[in-house]
Amino acid sequence: MANVIVIEDVEDSANLAKKILTKYGHEVLIATNGEEALQLVNSPDINLILLDLGLPDVDGQTLLGVLRRNYGLTDVPIIVCTAWPPDAAQKMAEAYGFDDYISKPYKVVDFMDVVNKFVGE
Amino acid sequence: MPIELSSAANYTIQELVDAYNQTRVDYMVPMPMNAARLAEYIQVYDVDLTHSLVAKDQDILVGLGMLGLRPEKSWITRLGLIANQRGNGVGQALMEGLLKNSDDLCIPQVYLEVIKGNTPAHSLFLKLGFKNVRELLILRRAPKEIPKPQSKLYPMNRGDIIFHLNQRTDTHAWTNQTETLAHLKGISGFHVYTESGGHGWLVYQRTFFNLSRLMFDIDQGDPVEIMRQLLIHLHSLHPNMDTYTENIPADDPHLPAFEDFGYIEAFRRVEMYRFPDLK
Image (cartoon, rainbow over the protein chains, first blue to last red):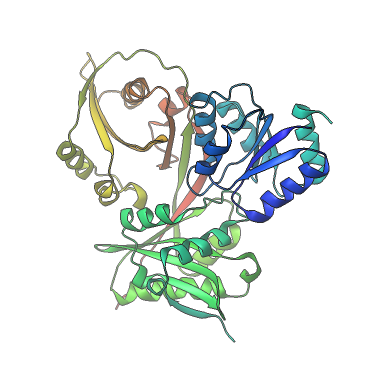
């Protein structure tokens, strides 16, 4: 079981991610914007962060940098959730140091394939 | 009951931002906002809510479009419809309403930008008389190492910044026009002079989270080399800041300098103009 923070402003997407992760035995906290995310990441024992790139108060790329540099989350895997085409997402991942990305809209199998790389089945 | 169009001024910022976010949920680049960001957007880009429109289906806001107004020009922005209202004429009705509002003010030039690849919206704009002008790049750069400067930096004060922005002779997207920059808090700028006589200047906005809105001009020396020096100084001053800059023309001769220092294209827009017959 892992502790996962889902940073996602669209309620349906956040709930779907939570439903999938909970079904596989993970504990999930949801932040709907960058400000909430910065409060949640102080929680102990975070194992994984799922980060939507489009947030209402700060974009995901910038938030990722803040989490890594200002909050010291260098060892916590961060997976980006995006509707970007794969080549654009890959390019952004290389530039910003995301650990991986999940394409939207979510497909359960693909979603868990990526999650399982970091928290195990 | 048919869809009803009304002035956006009849709604609160929170109602508008909620509607706007709903229209963008399924976009590749959703760009959601909160109320504070939309309020800033309205102020910085001279959005006139009285002439902006909301589409309503009974009690539900199903779409909106905003109109920015500046002397002799207007700008259509934040146009969006919730997914189940697309393809049934509501978008065209919103656009026609916005164009009528602009034309009623006798504005001779209407701008807009559409994300490249948004074919339904692009086709609608072409149908309504807009012409493609150019492609604009949205660039990002994650913090990374940068070489040492080989030029001298001289800071600009606000008066110097506005003076130099006004001196620019090329055409700028609405977001990058002097009127936009003049509304902003937290803009900084500097000149760079090289030993070989090169000169350029760079203006930018610094917020808590990132650097943005890079505006620049090079009046002496090799454009790429002077641009490199400007970027080296910028990122030496703010080594840990993420950078985001938008609407740089795809044929801008300074782009190789951006590529050299790790800027990547996030996405691109097509800029379009319409020159109405106001007789």
